[in-house]
Length: 207
Ligand code: PRP
Ligand code: URA
Image (cartoon, rainbow, N blue to C red; front, side, top):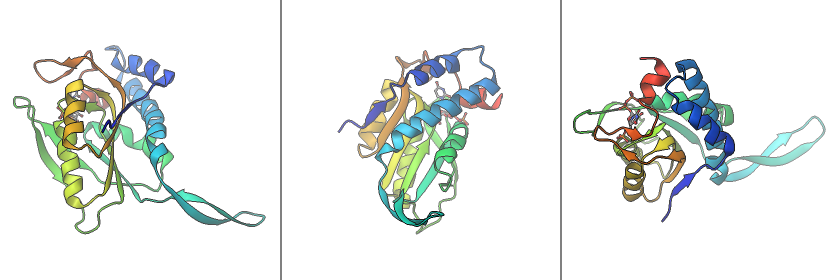
């Protein structure tokens, strides 16, 4: 099953190039991530289901629509935080469950350091947010955690992926739709995406 969708929006291509630029300031970087996530999320959420919803207009009763599933945003700390505000603009009723993973810099494996998912109260649908899909280890581990929690439907939204990470995530979780703004050439020997944009967390948070 092919689960990977790449945005073809021209504004995505333009903003992605600005995002990569080494001269982009953290303030500009956050703005580009916000704009990219808005477009990406608009595209990714087209697959969400609707149900009828009653509303009273000033003139009469009307049967409109509401999202059927309860949506949970799951930013992977830290860099996923940069994508939350754009999602909240589109789905203000979404709740947020943070998952903390950092990459062990030698083994390039994800190390879990934060998880507080309430037992027995799994969300209907989780949108996992992380700008970078490098080896795929962090995304795979986050999605493992959400499936153990009991979440039946999961989408992954990222800004940039490496082919290695996209393949690994597709293999590990073929039921998860992956939405990316772009996919790059490869990983370098220390697990960074090339040409990439460097360390997304450091660039977002000026560290
Ligand atoms: C970065 C990024 C992803 C992860 C991707 O996080 O935000 O979470 O690396 O790499 P992977 O696909 O090989 O797992 P990092 O560990 O640098 O933590 P940070 O967000 O706190 O900077
Ligand atoms: N994490 C990042 O922030 N950048 C990369 O290129 C790879 C992992």
